[in-house]
Length: 473
Image 1 (tube, rainbow, N blue to C red):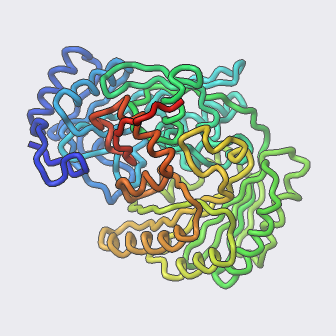
Image 2 (cartoon, one colour):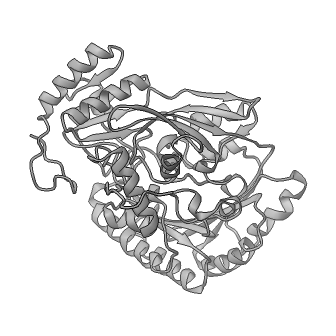
Image 3 (tube, one colour):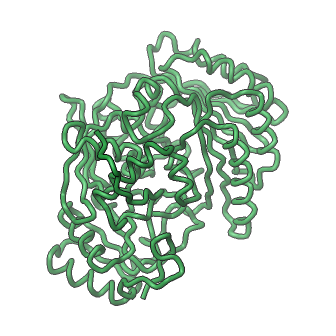
């Protein structure tokens, strides 16, 4: 018997098979039907490595880790999980802050072997398997001088990032990751292969663009790509005593920024780092980004000497696997005086040197898309913020998480409606409901009832299945 700690079985024993029996059944059935699909159990040497996920606060022991290589193998694993009422976690990059890509006593469907990326430079499109990482996508595109806008840490999974929306350095110019999404192939909760796009199952295509992994396991994405020429990157660090001046100057500059420019800043208890990324005409680059290095007397200064690929990997080691993380984020319409005071007060009490507030400039092409077009909510926001304590010692867990919740909660009270589900360490209906708002949440719940009525895919920022009285038109 397996205890499932979620709304669908909290505090009670599930009817699922016990861990050992589940491993035996899934191994036997998968080996018979899909012999090239690997099943790893607790007694195998690879298990301890493969059960780990990015966030070091998460330590869970699944009964079986299934490593498919084809969509058919994914379908078979999903069918088995449904048949035996097994808890099912889907893992791509393993970057979920709350550890939703693993579980205790259930099945982890590890897609990491399905990581092929195929670029078509003539059509400027790319096909990406469900287990690929952002680094795979970035490197494949760079060879053709093409990009798809994505996140900022290269060992993040393409799937998880995309299904939540996907934002990064290129979003002001080219939109969110979902705005370049053309179609997906996915396996539904019934183990059925389904293709969806703007013209095929359009309601589902609406839902997966921001609705997370609630509707199936994506085995292949197809994105459009965009030409990217030379870029210019600037980065400056400012001391603690200059924070107030820098924030006010940054706010004024960012308000006039063209969409070819994306800026961001990170604040810790001692340092504020400001970055400016230019992807427009080279002739204008230096003049546009240089003012961000003159907001106060900088401790360090860097302009140029960095490619887009290097920019995409520069924080990989800081956000390395095995470190400990918490996150709470939200959207801002402006960085007003109240927000500045909140940021200054919060970072003053940051519990570790790497605990930070990160703020990314939005707008531009993101806001060109109507709010109703996708499940993602927050198109009108000018900035995204995240309170993110980062630490290494388990002894610091309680105080770091408490700081993240308190600091994030204060800024959340000043934020716009809607949220980015990819960067929330807390879970529960309130998190997902507040991320989408009542109208979108109800539409997503109706989609969930259609495609996953038993909530097999519940290890995510979950949408509870609820049939709609009136079908969406």
